[in-house]
Image: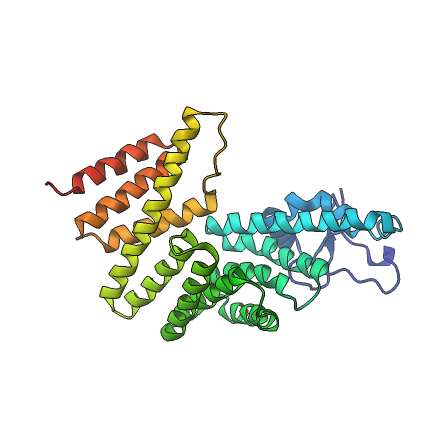
Length: 327
């Protein structure tokens, strides 16, 4: 099917813009026919990034028909938009967890655009979308754009100071990551300190969310050559993850023994990638501390037990046994 746009066939005064860069479009998606691109590379990038997941939804949402604007269909349209937001968020987070920052961009961009359609401009509900798009651009080293996105997120939070601890926590974590990359280490420590405070208020001191703040702060102290504090923070990271994974393993064992029992869901793929990276970093840093190495390798063994990878379970469990002090 031909996907070219023929300008003479468009209504007078209508100009189609590229989904990714907002420049004048010359191509359209041949399936939904409501999404446009300036060239084939942007069309392909959007297809891989998000469009193949949402193509059919866009046909209904973007078709400006009398039926779609009928009051009886307004609720259905809103639900479709909210579903679109959730799909884009999940896809962007998944691709970021795999380190695919370029592929995450279309999903993160559409997440922000659709959120603006639903909630309006410059509101606190847009903050998660700003932060996700900033994360994607951090991975591509687009730091000026990251700073702009975080500035908009910060402004939305400042206008709504009672927006909740979780929003403040996520904002400070993103600001801390940017300041770490740009070498503003004192500012990074300030933001990660706030990250930890808000995370502990929202999730608790032993939460893995709070643990992420400890891990990022430890990295800053390593860059500042303050190894004593870094060691202390990495030890706290190990303790929290060991506690958390032990509970998950126990839950999994109980579920296996009683399949009809109700249990809390375990972590998702995004979290597994994050904890694996954290633990391997700590393992390398703690290479001369046998007690800490035992805890970290035991964590990794539990991690792969939860994944069902028994070969890796044996490998890390064997490593833990090797490093266990002899009484």
